[in-house]
Amino acid sequence: MKLAAIDKHISVSAQIKPEDLPDIAQQGYRSVICNRPDGEAADQPTFEEIETAAKKLGLEIRYQPITAGKVRDKDADAFGTLLNALPKPVLAYCRTGTRSATLWSLSQAETLPLAGILSKTKSAGYDMAGVVRRIANGGRTPTESAEDARFDVVIVGGGAAGISVASSLLSRKSDLNIAIIDPADVHYYQPGWTMVGGGIFDASDTAKTMGSLIPSGVHWLKSAVAAFEPKDNAVVLDGCRVVKYDRLVVCPGLKLDWHGVEGLVDTLGKNGVTSNYRYDLAPYTWKLVREMTSGRALFTQPPMPIKCAGAPQKAMYLSADHWTRTGRIGEIDIQFMNAGGVLFGVKDYVPALMDYVDRYGANLNYFHNLIAIDGPAKKARFEIREPDKDPLHVDVEFDMIHITPPQTAPDFIRVSPLADVAGWVDVDQATLRHKTYDNIWSLGDVMNAPNAKTAAAARKQAPVVAENIVSDIKGHSATAQYDGYGSCPLTVERGKIVLAEFGYGGTLLPSFPRWLVDGTKPTRTAWLLKERILPPIYWRAMLRGKEWMAKPEKVTAA
Image 1: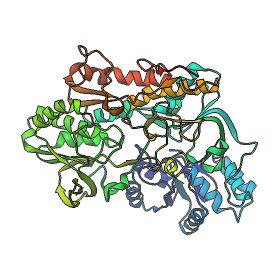
Image 2: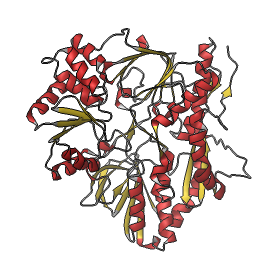
Image 3: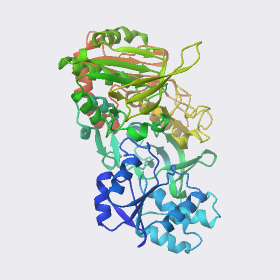
Image 4: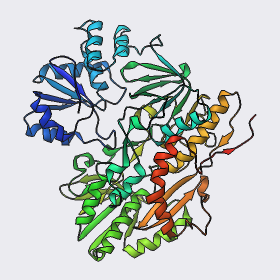
């Protein structure tokens, strides 16, 4: 926890945790303002958790959530009103502190000289030059100035896709001037969270500092994106800084919409409500599984698209396997609540999965979409939308529930000129080039190609994008094509996996000969691949531009 004092009345910081509050109170702070919406990141505690800890210590606390890059004048006015009314000193926080510093800067525009605002925020470690320009321009978004940075390639997003494509670009053209834009301090190996929830991995093994993974020579702009201006080849950051590019790669991942289920945010991490889709909750999944001896366990799957379509049932299989091994399976009522109408989208893998559904005595409930949850009452409400029938609602009691949240493109993507009508970045599914702006590419979970949203897909996409960008720099047309490859290692029991590998249209695309790994059947070899081989491949190969079994398919350049 690092608190940055702007003046004697106000400090700002990055995300705090409930356990930080005693130290904050000890340092003399009397009030806290949260400027970060719930559900922005996988490792983020909810405001309710922070509020509970603050009130126990007698701290005043207020919730003023601001979407990244969307600080409006009226938001700054509201922040100023809060600041005037609350006991001082006040600590305001968001993801990195930038939104809070921006709110303070704008709120002081009429009372402090611009040089004073800039001096105070710089001394706190925040560069508000863009905000000062915004104030000087009467609140308008600033145009390009000599201060603005310019790069050959700008990559939005420092996740699996962003770091991989940066490394793949440098392996092809080492003199490229590349920037990655991402506000996160920590990078997560998210495919490992299912294994954390099953008691196989430790959560800490799935996280590394972002700074340790950014490729050498690549500039890391630790900020959130506010807007895209593709006609001007510009990205506007929080604080109104402008970054210019020759070519842009967009891969910020997707948004887990925890607020998409009524009551969910208030009960996550307690009352038997968990999710392997959040870093801090995957260990709670394993705790619930270990402690459950009888009762009803629900596992939900929302409407598509979602990150790793098999993850909801992976949680169910690993939980059921533990209950089987401990002799409790007969005492537990397992219900899989699926908003869709099939168990898995590629039919070749369904028979093997159904064998495990039957083995564990799990009940499949199709067209059941979770819309609300009452944690203390341990009731979940589902909307049932079967074809050609009127929708109806049912309440289901539970002792444990594993929730896969609804998922959308991030807000700053959905409202941008890069998005299609559904909010996803609009690309050609083979070249991954934007359909409208020919110097923009996209990969990973945020783009609209009809492939599975998995890390394995990003591993295949990154070399394609890198190859095509370098080809474009040389004045050639696309030389690489993406075939829609995605992989979903379905952990059907501890020690065995159904290794689903497929491309566009459900075409099977196995990486190994059938005698070694028959992906349509559960195998020990696939489990070893998931447990022992894929994590080091991720950290030491994929993120470093070593394209083992991921070299792109090439076409003849024009």
